[in-house]
Amino acid sequence: MFRDINATPRRRGRDHCRTKFSAETPDMTSPYGIKLSVHLISTYFGDIVSKVCECLLRKGTLSHAQIMHSTELSKQNVTNSLLVLIQHNCVQSFAIQQPGGFGEPPKIVTKYMALHDNIIHHMRFPKFLSIVSNEFGQDCTEIFEGLLQHGRLSMNQIMDRHKDKHKALVTDGENSKVTSTLHENFNKLAQARYIERCPAHEPFLEPVEEGAKKRMAKSKIGDFSQTLEARALAAAAPMESIRFLVETDAWSNGALDDDSKNSPSTKIPGEKRKHDSLEPETESWATNKNKEILWRVNFEEFVRRLRHKSCVSHVTTRMDSVAGIVLTAIFEASRKDETKVKMEKTVPLLLETIFEEAMKSEEGRSLTLGRVRGSLVQMGCELPTIGIDEIYSIDLKTIIDKAQTLEVESVVLKKYGREAYRIFRLLSESERSFETDKISATTFVEKKDALKILFQLWKDDFLHMERIEAQKTEIMLWKLNKRSVWEQVLDDMYHAALNLKLRLVHELEQAKDILRVLKGKSLGDEVLEKRRRVGDKWKVLEASLMILDDAIMLFHHF
Image 1 (cartoon, helix red, strand yellow):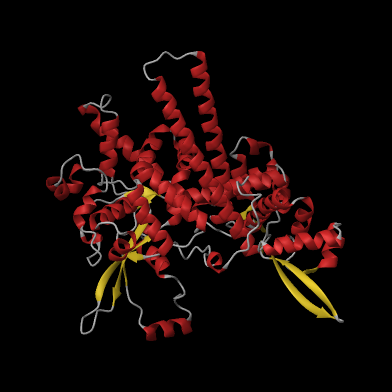
Image 2 (cartoon, helix red, strand yellow; image 1 turned 60 degrees about the vertical axis):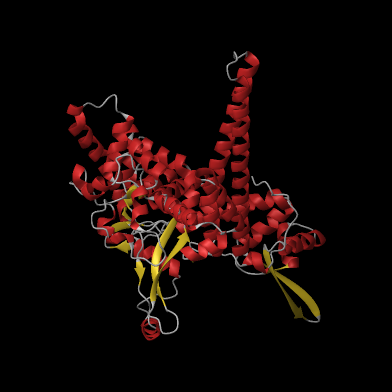
């Protein structure tokens, strides 16, 4: 599955271990995660933009001046690159107050942080499009595709894009009908939470006084352990009450009167923000009251949907198809009540509600109430008792943990062999330490071979090892180093994804060379066969990348 699966084992040094995976530190990711992100940005937006992006990914949150210093790019190049990255939701800016020099008042400084997850989401666009297409059809897909291509669009820009695309089919008399249809399709996407209002361009983070910080920490009212980046993302996010709100008068042609008078009609999406100033010590862009509401794809909802799909796939494989049908019904019935992506347990539901939802699908119509109850018990769900009602909640964290463990076990089997797989499985199923003799006896591996395998796994940071003295003899205790293993596996997945993307670029260049050679020539059977082979190879590589990405999401997002 991974390109470097048989590579020479590595002992992770201090520099490597410095990188951690944390939802609260959006600027931190694995080494190959950064390389994959930079490759994606370079492919989509060019080398200059990717250089700015790589600087932010590697160095963390920086000001405009710091980016210029680190990249040695001109002021205009940095400004334009940041505009592109912000337009495509790959960078978030925010303003903070910093103390001035001697005898000078404090000053407001704009900082920029790269959003690694949003960058990686760009290679998942085919998955997102497929979900929308299957649920709503082609009309909604066109609107959604425009947001994927341009990053952020206003309703009027979506309307203009549709008119340009269907210029030959839309007459003046049909404009009102087209507007109504577009509005209806846009509402469908917003109600399904597939699109959302864009976050604030440049939220200002209030400085926290030391005294207030200590008082709040003692009272446990506030969480000041959050990183600056996490605070910025929270401040930029629109309120939940307006996040998916579509205003009825937003489709009017006068929504951008001031901008329309001062700019050409051919302006590209996001270009108008260049006139709002991107200087590091400026006011927030949000001060312009005449600006249209911009919309973008809500990646969070698609991650939630794909997480649900992964859970259903896992229980279907490990149990049976009925378990998959029942879990799907639970997800559908509780979809609007989920408050975050990584829900550890499903929303508690009545057995009758689950049964009714399951009956809506063709596969679930043959189920009985008893069969549904039995499937819920099989999945190990909790059974709280409130009166006479049966209320069920399924532990999703256990399902995800089991799926991750199975994936890691397959990696160990390929990389170290079957005996190492048995040892690893024993240690992964228990959180306690094992003696060498106990491991050897339980896994039926000779002690000499077991020691060799254990030391190899320890050398690669898969295990913790502790030496203790007992009755003048030394005993070695072994325990799974889960965090390190999961980090290594994820980094290897990013590495494999990068290799697949580079191979795709190589195959594309080869296909272009073939077309250049054949330009103006008649196509014989040999040439057609060559083109077919290139096309088949491309499809296999794309499919492999999507399968690998499922595993990346399992470890990083789920």
